[in-house]
Image (cartoon, rainbow, N blue to C red; front, side, top):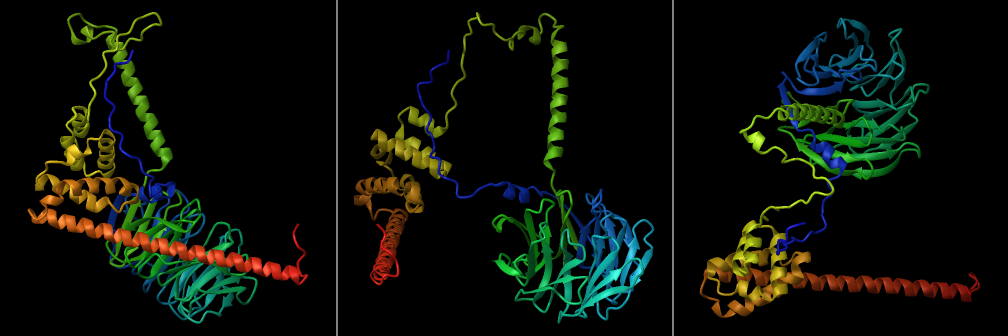
Length: 532
């Protein structure tokens, strides 16, 4: 049998949540473990190896450094550059890397021996775009000479050159499942789609600002460009139609990334922020602030690491633990606890008389169906406001609730006291120190829609009790004035909303009348047969 407590605890009001803690919001917040290392110069490009253990290539100054994805420690360093290196990018199998340079050269490296396998020359300006094609035998480069070039790895020769851009070309990506088709962005404000079998672009879109980065969603039909603090979403299937425009950064966006699932977009900016977007609705779900302007960003293929490179040479690697690893850890913990429980059971089998264990033996025994169990019950623990309310000490209960600074608890208690008819008792006979928190709460919360109706009644009771006491305390008088101004402002706002609602209703009614008039005119003219 259960023990009767005789008192039901106060149940705080549960209001609808204004924010949704979705999986997308949790994903961004899981990158909590932070590792920071320092490089000699600004980090212009980051690239994770597609093959485990997903080493991180960091392009900075005149070298490309291959770092451990967890510790950030350097494994290899490629220094075969005569000038500043750019865009160190992996091939799909992780065996080769290509990088451009300030001296207009492009080099392909064997990652085992770090030797130069190929060197492409033909650009007349710095090369800041260099990537392997999905066929693994082609390389695409973009340069400050405004050209995009398509190279053959086997022969080391240029296959085709695209010269329609009019300014620096700094970014590009191959379309998924469409070998030889590339999309590039330029400082001439355009995003162009190229086909290696043609001599010119097959599609062009005007971003409106110098384009710093582009990417294509896994479907291959949607492209996203970033320039200035704007992002544009393009429908490639319908000829480059603009679908969305996003502006969630305060300064220029420098890098875009997609997670492994292709459902989350990340953008990095000179405003120190990395923002996460849900591609289902293009809404920002999470933001991370860094110590300085961001130049480069990459997320690992396993979605467990987020690398960000700053202007001052700082490399920040944030890590998260995937759910599968967490489950394995949890299972291991359960196994350990199970073994410990078994050992404890074995220990209990050989109890010595006179010990505490011997005295408490059988405490966890399971009763059979014909046993009579006496439930002693546990003493009910009450919050201070519940303890006072149980003793009918209403004034003290209200003071205790006010000390929680939780509006839901305070309003729930006020409602309970009002239902009991004890609210005037709880509010009466207060000095200025006891009345101040009551007035301060009313001033802050009376315009909160879920609480307004109740707090108006509470305010009327307070005015009835203390109007004759005005002028005795400067603090109380000021709070009464603020409460008056707050209610007047809310009344004016409600009046304006009612007027707006009336105007909208009038417009809707007028529109309906005009529509009906046009229909009647059409019927009379014989253009539309009347509806029976």
